Every structure is written in structure tokens, then in C-alpha cells.
Figure 1 (cartoon, rainbow, N blue to C red):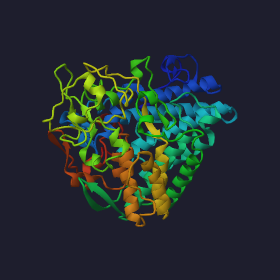
Figure 2: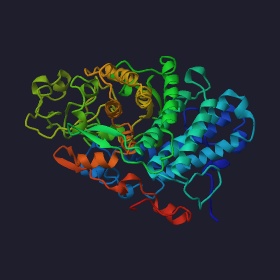
Figure 3: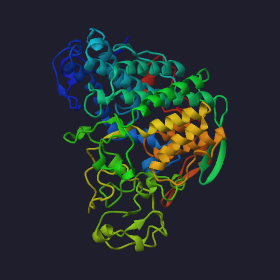
Figure 4: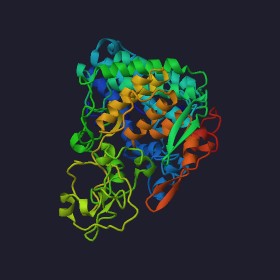
Length: 557
């Protein structure tokens, strides 16, 4: 039978580097590499490098993970494939760029590295090698966590050389492997402040704890969905109550145990606030390239400005309009989310480009979002914008809420350009922030019946954002508290790769998308109507054809 061969072998197929994650050929066996700190770094670097292979973090990840939900808006041509709930029309589907293929390559490299570490005692005796062994398990868990949420039951391939014909394992078994990997990783990894952790982009113990807490909250919410719990969701300004639909494959998961462990992990992380990581003081201290790799950014995919293969071509380019250097208003916040913020909330005061231009060129005028605003208009046009171009189009009706958080510059003092800048940008992809510790703990506290503590945690995030509406001492109903935590996740983590999975794990995706019906996108509407087919992603046709034990594609494909 055909076998899947490990992507990292000896000699030329092995990639190695310093902790910066740069790659260079290295001629040595993987077992030999695993016996020293320097060699072990090279093994793990080969796994991290997958993030930048085949356009994963350049564009594909962002499009597939964060376009198909009720808080994302964009022109129809942007959302016609990945943003439609069906990725089979996307250029990456059924290619090496397909996230199924990307994550299994990451798993294959992690499996080979794990076996190499375990061929000697170095991973139990040398602190730096222990840390890298833990990172290997962390990355394998990260990959499987995406696969199980995207595709449901998937093959569990846990050895470097695995039979191609591999049946699916149950959703519960996959989650069991993910939690086992991360619990073990915690035993081996160190906090960033303790040393033994590589340069930014290498995960530390805090990253493992928060990823594991996210996993347990995902499992817990999915388990609760089988009991038909209720959540209120804002649908274009109307508060609508939904009964959560059962999430397939999660009926036997113990929600209380999951949430108890999630809270323990968040307690552990928050107790160290200020030592390893912390909340930024405000929005302008958090986002923009002048705040790169700040104390709130726990972990992400590390870009390398010296190599365009390790640069991002989506975040700055798609999110930022003229004249701020991006391609235009290609991805932006849905207006139905914008309306959920307090008007003084930093996350829209500074988090949205309230003045922009619809194209580059000397004849362009400023337009505003919201259009016809009493606050953002010609009379209030800031002086630095007037100095660049004084003209304002007061009749423009189609303003959109372009986010500033992915701007590759200083949001408070932006640069103005006469033409769009380079597509590829030296820009990290942030995957875990310290702020999420409070939101995950709040979710756990609600389900563990400590509603006051949950609202206090939500208020930590809201106070940082200067929001006026606070919840501590005002909320006693469990359904209301659960709904407010989910809402705050949407407000705080907008376009940070969580919203679709939050809807899916609570069994809300179809109801919320279909009740929303459409999202206003400038001068057009984007349909959000979905069906059962859209609950899971399509497995690559090549995998379905070659893996005789897979049992066919997911429903509807």
C-alpha cells in the first residue's frame, strides 16, 4: 500500500534555522538533531515553517477561517468562495494550499520530530530540549484542533510513517488526542520569563495553557449544545433567542469537567499577569506596527521581513483602504457588529478608519464611515488628513467600517500614500492574545454558576476599551450572562479567526446566519443564508479518492 512519507527527512528535505524560524538546508539525521538544543531547534523550526508554506499564513488561513460569518463584510468577489460557506470554489481547494493538506503536513513533521526526540533522553534531561518537545506537541494539537472543527471526524495520524488508507476517528477521540498533547506539553514547556523559549513565534507555556483553555471551552460549549441551552444573539439590532443545535459527535463530553479545567488554566495564566504577558493599556498601545510583539501578543505565526516567503499578503493589504497603503476596502466589519459597540468604545473610535478614500489618485476626496455622520464629517476632518488632501465628499452614502487593527503602521499617526503599497508585508499573524484569558474564564465561570465573577472578567476587557456599559452587579440570569460573553468575544476578537468557530461550537451557525439573511457591504448585500452542507468544510477530492477508508466526503460535497 501507498504510504504517506514524512515531509522532513534527512539531508536536503530537512530545513533548519535559528530560533528566528529562518530555514536553511542541514545535513544530519533527525535523531541526531534531537539530542542537542541547537539541533532540536532545527527540528521544531521545520514544523513552524509550515505556516508559511503554500500560502497558508500569507492568505489562505485568513480567508478560510475568518470570512464566513455574520461579522465579516466584503465585496462579493472577495467572499464568493471561502466567504460563502463552501471552499470548493477557492483557488486553494484540493491543492497543496488546501488547509487540510497544510495541517496534515504540520502533523507529519511533528510526528517525525516527536519520534526523534523520544529516541534519546535529551528531551527529559535538557531544559531547552524539553521546551522544544513541548512545542512539538503544541503544534500537533493546534493542527488537529483546526481539523476537527473544520472537518469533524478526521483520521488520527500519530506516526511519521502512516498508511494512506486511514479511517476517520470520532470527534471525541480527536479531542482526546488534542487535550492529551496539550496537557503533556504543559509539563514540558516553560514560561517565557523562565528562559528556554526561543524568539517570538515560539509558543511558551502560556500559549499552551490558553490554547488548551480554548479547546476545553470549545468542547464544553459543544457538549452543552446537545442539551438545547439558549443564547441571545444580536441580529441587526434585534435581540433574538436561539436554542443551540446539537453539535455532532460531542454528546458524551462532560461540559462541567471541561469548563472546570478551562477555568484552572485561565486562573494560572491571569495569576502571572505582568510577568510573562499583560493587557495593553489601550487600543492604540495594542495594534499597529509600532506595537509589534507587545506583551499582549502571546503567540502567532512569525513573519520575517527579509524573506517575502515569510510575509503576509492579506492582513494589511485586504483590510486597509486608500490612502493608508492597502489594496482598498476589501475586508471590513459588518455594520450589524459596529452597531453593538458603545459609541465611545475604543474598538470603534480607534478601531475603524472613519475617514478614507475609495481609490488612490490625486482627485480622490475623503469619505466617512458612518456615512452622513454627525461626528465624522467635513467639519471634523482631522488636520493631518486635511494637509494630505482637503476635499471631502459629503454626498457619499456607502461608507464601510475598515478595521485598523491590521494596519502595518502607527494608527494614531498614519502614513498617506498615492498608490497601494507592496502586497507582501512583514506582519505577524496573531493567534493568541492575553485578553482571551479573561473571556475564556468568563465563559467557564458562567457555566460553573459564578455569574458575578464572569461579568467582572468581561468588564476587565470592556474597561480597557473605555466602554460605558458594564455588567458586574447587574446580571444574574445565566442565559443573559452566557450571551454577553459570546457577544464580547465578537466585539474584542473581531477578524481574529474566532467568530465562525464560536457560532459552530455553540450550535448557532445555521440559525444566526440564516436569521441574519444578508450583510450590508457598501452598496450591495451579501447573502448569509446557509444549509447543513456548510457546517463542515469539504475534504480535498484527492484525499477522498486516495484514502479508501475515509468513507467519502463530508455531507453535501
